[in-house]
Length: 254
Length: 315
Image (cartoon, chains in turn brown, cyan):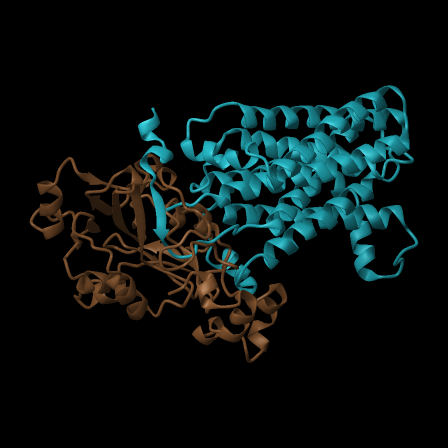
């Protein structure tokens, strides 16, 4: 069995239901994402279009993150899933440097690497990943790509010539496919990501990798101090945000 | 083909999450720089010991492993400090994953540091016989003094992979296309020779003029080839579009452009000519100034090369 994922970008309408389902199912902290849907606007008014691209771990057969991990925190499951063991991770961020798809993040609560696991815990119980269940248009297709009769295999066969993977030149052999994608949606160099440019929120970079309130000394003191844990409230310092930025309108928020 | 450019297609990200910026920052630059000094002094020291009699460099037997020990510990300290879970470093030894250059490097660097510590203790206690004269541990170390010459060739041999394994880590960081160049391996070696010769120059006051001339020669050669390699990567076209896009952060001006050229001029070009001139006239002060410039410039060059590939969006 080799589990794979396929997203039909012709069907995706950018509702972000999969994003939220993933967040809830996996208790992904604020500022972090296992799955995100990127909006890309193409063309010049009035000839414009908007594309939506769900991005998650590609569960590569030849995964650079698994290879570089010094402690096997990232490891393969028998069904092809590249899983992550947070209790073993040392937080070196080697996997973040190795993943060509930027799919790995440093969890700000645990200060360990984390990523999409295709909801391995749900698979184990015979359920589908949360994002698949949440998709209202069945754009997310999941299944065994070694089984010729599975829905995903049939879909790939039916759309031959239009099935793509991201960055095939990296020879990572991803097990995550796209139908209906183009260079503008799948190649990050083919579109601009302008800092501050906004539709609903500012395009920006993270202030810190991992817990932003966790300095070098805190990393060593964390086991001995009671406030080592971090929760979502830590990100909700609205008072300071207001002071820093003036108002939400100024931030471009709605 | 204008229709293939971003301006023609006007493809712009209009909604996305915040992406990570620079993940490996100044601590990793310092880590690599300190390792270059730590292994470089052993490599250059071995070259000097091969070329000259020990009498010409009276303190090299203890000062060389001492410098290496100090900088290897800086390297190990910042390796540890940069981890988000520093206490779990032990997992590298308890649950090693041997396909990872980080694991192999950590094991080799630990062994190397252990052996350098032994050399430092033997060399130091031999050089200062009155220190800890009655201490049983010091007596034991002094009793194994001949072990220094036996273990030293192995330490020199080990210094090579310890120098180079960072290049393999960078090669395994397959998301950062700029580091995938084979030139990285040679850059690491030249950096070690540059840093090693520069560090030894700073302690070569009482050494023979011939030994200092050899140090100036190694520094001149290392700065020359380091500069050539960076220029090769800067000007020549890469196969990969990502590497080209990464280099644009230097080509297009801005802070990394300034840091890069400061590194090139201060660290490589000026020290090259100063070291060349010192091979003819033995000016100790000027040579020390050259060594400091080279060390500062090397840090800047490494810093730029480490950071710019991390600024490219990966998805």
